[in-house]
Length: 390
Image (cartoon, rainbow, N blue to C red; front, side):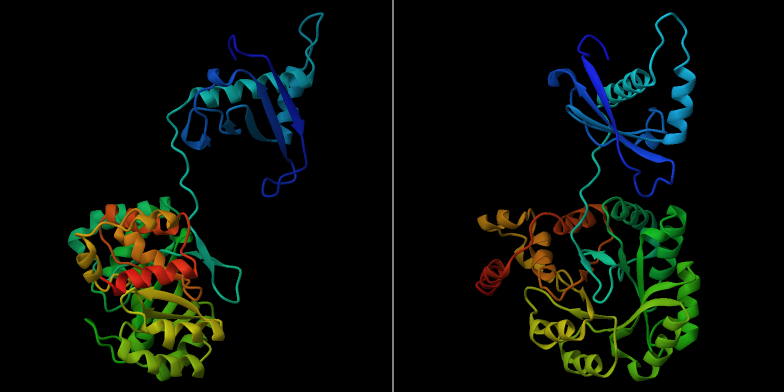
């Protein structure tokens, strides 16, 4: 511990869930001058040269260490054998060893802090939660494969999970499947895709043929969310989707539209079928869904994905030359993308929005909308008034 060392105290507490029957939690308080410690933060010991059987969190004077009880007992017993006329107690060994580990953790200042968890919403009727900002993939193309891989990898690092694609999106499903498999992150993602009754896309497959094609291209045996694309074949396909859900081939089912002209038809289907999800167009400039669809989603206990929150980029184009209003700081907004996305996800019916991007910088900006404060009703009205006056 060096010349600043004074003392360390170990408190042994109850078993910690998730570490097995032999797992115990011990707290190490190191009493030393704060200036001797330097910056301390969460330590990922699997990525460091610190003993990986310990996990140490330093925060100036407080440190936590975790280690399996059986290992501690064995090591302590071995070390506790007297080697002189002044035997060392097990308590002294633990104190010295854990305090030294805490000092080593603080000496390392290059470990990055873990990103904060994104804001999330529960899927209605379940305990499963989704981050409020996901990723749309209608622009995914083979020539951007490396950029897409970097983007998906970064999204996972930031805590994002929702990726939405469709059989109609060219090579998107196949690119996602290859990237997710190469990164080994399938179990950390919520994958959604779509099919149609008419086969109105390249390849022309419908129904089960389309679904099997999606499974193969996405290199998975189960889809988290399968949706009927643009209401094409709802009456034909939803009974089939319900059977696939019962057999475990999909986890959730839904329907989508990205057109205001289909909102009345979507509302009729929402009343007719028990849907887990709907996907609808909604933005600060296109608020029709707030009247026609979103209140019904709350009434029907249906999750909502929001597409085209930037109106295919046109909103960002209109706002690019303008400065953010000073009051944007109140909702932790640093870009127009975050401004527009926070308006969308702050609606109580919205579960997640899926802005499209193929660049890491754009993804990071979008994911920033899942951090900090969301607008309350008064702020939402202020944002609407600002847009309407634009």
